[in-house]
Image 1 (cartoon, rainbow, N blue to C red):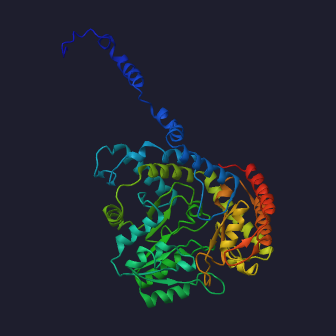
Image 2: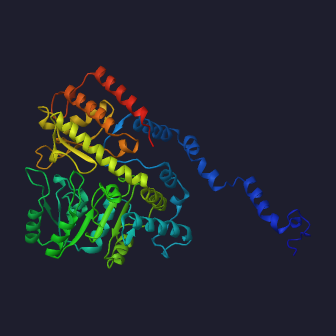
Image 3: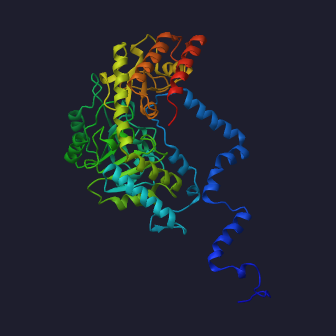
Amino acid sequence: MQADGHNGNNALDTLKKSDIKVYELIGRQSQGIQTFEQYHKGILDALRTEDGIVYDLIAAEHTRVQDTIQLIAAENQCSQAVLAALGSVAQNKTTEGFPGARFHGGSEVVDEIETLAAARAKEVFGARYANVQPHSGSTANQIVLAALLNSGDKILSMGFDQGGHPSHGAAESLIGKLFEVESYYVDRDSFLLDYEAIRQQALNFRPKLIICGATAYSRTIDFAEFRSIADEVGAFLLADISHISGLVIAGAHPSPMNYAHFTTTSTYKPGGPRGGLILMGEDTALCKRIEQATFPGVQGTPYLNHIAAKAVFFKEALSEEYKARQFEIVENARRLAYNLVGLGYDVLTGGTDNHMVLVNVANFKKGLTGIIAQKCLEDCGIVINMNKLPYDKRCATVTSGMRLGTPIVTKNSMGVEQMDEITSLVDAVLKEVQVVSETEYELDESFCDEIRGRVKKLCSRFPMR
């Protein structure tokens, strides 16, 4: 067939049909079109060229993490495969709604990505339903509440100052402003959850929703008991397992899956990408309400690159290596707690069942506060966070406590012997620091240099993985 005045004798017309694809590939590459591998391989080079300042800052963050001991309980370290998915072209796709019912065209590939991520999440957690769209753990909680409650409805949750999370109803949070929230507390002497006291409180308050789960509680949570309380008062039960979700995956902590009506978690704390997740066990009757509350209720287009990264992480979480590491995380935390107790530190509840250790530093040295502990340890290359403790008289920006966590050091292959070394380093710094005020202190620079050198030497033996 001839067109546009051509006689049909050009080079393309002389090719066999089997050669056309080869011709098209060569032609496209000659115009600068790259393959998938070529396009993504140049990401770091592109950043270096286009914005050297940001490139250098990210490089500095890599160095900071590599050369310091990371003991923040709320942090973890994702794999290079997860990072690759985060930095992919999946980030460019806009599409609201759920697979098979999108509000934008061109969604056939991302539909497969999201379907895969949800299927893997269900397998990982033993769930019947998984919503992988929430942008964060807090957003996941907001979605559940939007699906269940009307403004002014009652929520019973662990107090923020007791170890709960702001998204469970802290007065300053959106949830605290929209709903009538009452807090339950840990026992003043043991710092353990008192389930009978919570039951009586629920019977008096009659909440529509009970939230269990914590950001600063180092013992096992009895989800079956919480469900019993919820059933007795006719309430829904939401279990937020963000901090312990990796342990739940491995069986290192009991699962709430068939006790809670809804289970939420962030996906970065167990070692995946930033994001949230909503799960349901045997009873999935309200899953459509959850999806409507997701979109258009609480958020718009999902982050498809994050969902792809979640799919990668969920595959990793199915491995025996991942599951074994969760038990090592607990073993390392228990070793830290045991060592600190032996050195005279006031470890809340006397130990830990999970990945975190809570310490009342005010009882170790006169005038010592959480903020001073955090800052002086960081001066020496040990990164922890101050933490307000139950019944703490100090404000949240000062605190009497510090919180230590073992996920990252364990990910980098440190074991109980290294926990002994870390305990010794922490103890040396807190014994050396001179308290000036609630927030001010003095620490000899030569001492800091010595400890930083020991920290860097330890970290060099256990590089980021």
